[in-house]
Amino acid sequence: MMRMNRIFLLGSISLVLLFAVAQAGAAEQAASPKTAHFTEIFKWINFAIVAGLVIWIFAKLLPPKFRNDAAMINAAIAKATAAKALADAQLRDAQTKLANLQKEVLELRALAERESGDEVERIHSATQTEAQKIAAAAKAEIEATERSARIELKALAAKLAVDGAETLLVKQLTPQAQESLINNFVKTLDGRPN
Image (cartoon, rainbow, N blue to C red):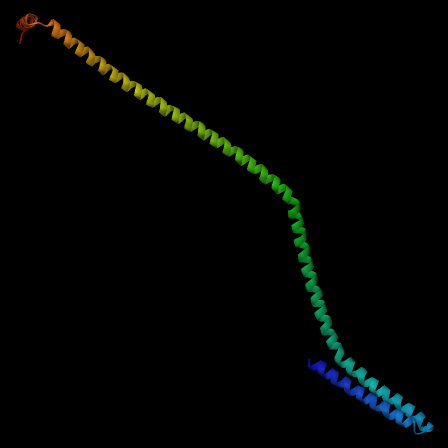
């Protein structure tokens, strides 16, 4: 910023001197024709001095600024080139992924179909196993119920047989038949050794 101020200040001073010389030259030209020739030479010498001074100032101050600007521009170009290379790499990567996307979708669909087929098979197998377990449990329960019913039927038949025998005995067993049975029993006991 200070350089810019110096350059502006020097340029302003040079312009003021140039205008002053131009005014003085115009005033002298009006004075006489002989001095006009000297004035013309003086103007060119003055112009050469001012132009040389301006060129020297610009030659001294502007090249470092131009070098700094060139370095900044080169750095910006290098940075932009690197950013472009990175963007190109990302674009190629995105295009590759996009190209492979259809393939990945097909692979995912095939995997999902295989997994769903495996899951259906597993569920079918589990269902059959459960059905077999339920059938075995039902068969075991039916057999247990059948055994229980047979036992109850036998117990009922035995009770009915005992009741039937009891009523038959009550009818057929008269006091005389009882006495005869007891006597026969006692006789069989007498013949036995102790």
